[in-house]
Length: 314
Image (cartoon, rainbow, N blue to C red; front, side, top):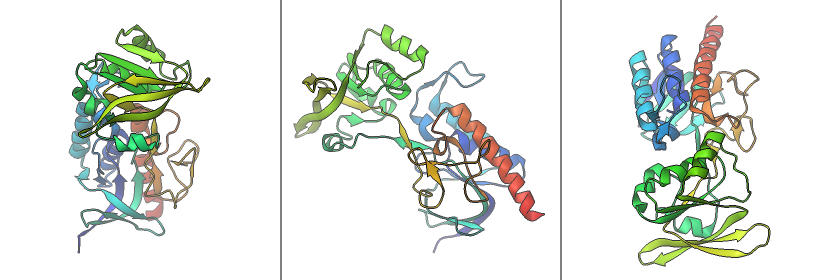
């Protein structure tokens, strides 16, 4: 039977929202426990250059998260390498169970579990995952030196992935079902000027195909969304970059959600539908999804948790 640890404030998740909540929770003398989850540091650990973090003209995503973790730890946050598999919010103190066997009880909880990459849900996509199909250019781009590859999507994620992949690939084909990208203008300008990138408008992925022994991608079939015509594009890698979905598995049946699963918070607040439970970062933010806004919400959540606990004590 595992240990039981009690804390005034339990922070679940370790991206910018979680670590910032740790800093502010520590400064409020709440002695917070932060459980990192499966991916310590969150999505920024699979990002290369971050160019929009105030005071840093450019910083590598993994380096920024290491610094944020060190800051939270130095402030007094107890950071634990564990993954919460069950969360009971039916009564206080709230109870969370970790995969290590540890049970955490808390007077207040901050959810900062972030988001995960979306997939298209195609059988051929699933078949070649890890064998030529990926959702992480920074993880897998290195394997495609001198190869032709395909990126699926039209937002910031897709454009950033395509630009990064030009460091390795001989050619990147960006496939988008419209003829207009939803990315930031500065990213679009970079993409359009990059001779290695060729946009293919009004198309969507129809099938990924490849060899069986060894398993590996050899190309994709794409469909013109206007005419239905199928085109074959030889490639060795397929990167799915169609956005992210909130990691709400712990609370989707207990907290109010909207917009495809994002946790609902009160206006100008991080309070959720259960008193004492707060949500910060990409699990609640369907609009901005930026590191800086996540960090700001982490600050808000910790300050609101401090106020909530003070009211309970009073």
